[in-house]
Image 1 (cartoon, rainbow, N blue to C red):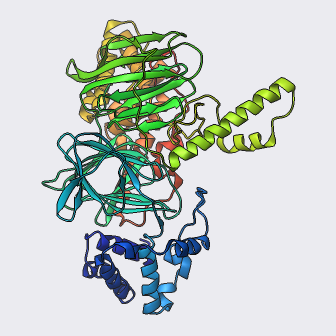
Image 2: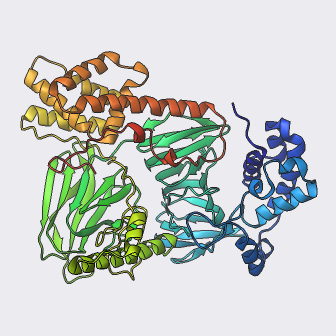
Image 3: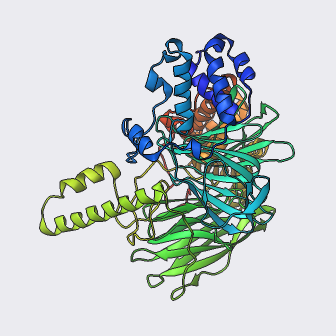
Length: 639
């Protein structure tokens, strides 16, 4: 096992001391071989952590500016300078050669300047409903919509309170009722955000940032959740301190003590009393909502929270359990464990042409046509139980032409600014291309260079990583990142045999449940009996289900480490007989599940180091062996 560098150990211990998760003595006992070097630094850190962080904690702006200008820029080109780590400033062996006074001075610089980052101006609070308060001394005082939140603020929502924090880089945290948190660290260049969650439920939409030194951390009584950029949920039981983590997109690392476990898309984990539970599969809402055509769509709640895309390209994810992606003229909504209640899908036109809305539920499909004259429309939605399963129910599509459509409140941030800049560049490139085509002249070099870097697509609303500003009237074009495959359990079939259709519904419900015993029973049913035609239809439904990455991931999990070998071999034979790529997808799913399980086991046994900077850290192991086939538009959509 590779020993950790002393500067990594120092950083870790300082964070734990500042967060009251460990004492100086506890850290020294943990690393006895470095006691002589660590003790003076940690005792200084403990003293500094106890000092009040008022105006004295903020150096003179001019001196800070001069200091930061001497240091290198971040890769994100924010036009700010970043403070290197102590290792960069003083060398890898600095702690062994410098004197205690110099070391303490270096430590003081690091702490005063915000822990390897320039302090952020502030985060922005959006209040949707109910009360939101902050702790002022020993008294809770009200916060208001639009308030700025600095590092150190402790806040909570009331029994009906819903709120959203937008950080300077555009990352957001949505607070449910009866949730309490403290913003412990808030810095940029590089991003260093630490939030301590004391209770309640948070929905995190975190910008991806692989800048050296960047981190986004959620601290709970029993765990530490480390993030590069992803969408996930954390729930803390105020009575027991138990922490539940559910990842919707990307991957997080849950750290407890000296151990860490990756939690990937569609997975959950529970941490309690210094122990990490098994990673399990999350149940999903078995409904798909897809909008096709030149429309920007958003699912809105009655209190103004929403998830979707505005016509100007702004992407927002404020509703817990709902995410959205747009590619070409198809926008999909991924629906997870969302709250029951009333919602409305709002669509707004951004270009000419007709379209449609497709709602796919266990009860069947409903299509709503949108003609070329409709500019704005709404589709009321209600989440309710259908045959024991949660499902979206829609009434009729209603035109809103002539009335104002509900609008989402999105705070301005670096994320929105980047989207506006990119939208403007995309518009310039599109104009240049049209002129070039009309005159027969080459495209300007500036447009070619921009296209190489950002691959803008004119007149297409923004995707996940970028948000536009309401002042940009042209839908923004954004760089295309690898799109996560739908987390909804789409089991496509063109069968008309009622028995096969019924089996397909049972299969999709089983996969959506995430329960391995239920999935295994559905797979065993497919190859049971003597009716060859029925068996073939059932196996074809399994092959169609495997076209979706999440379905494949859940099915492959049954066969890790050679488990259920008899069922595995029977399915391989049956899938081969059906033909197509079902057998190859099945084998690939098993390989992926095996690799994922090995990664989780190996990381759980290995003491944690600093947050991973590997570019593949936010993707599951399927990124390397993912089947290439995709679901065609003729079958039920992979969302």
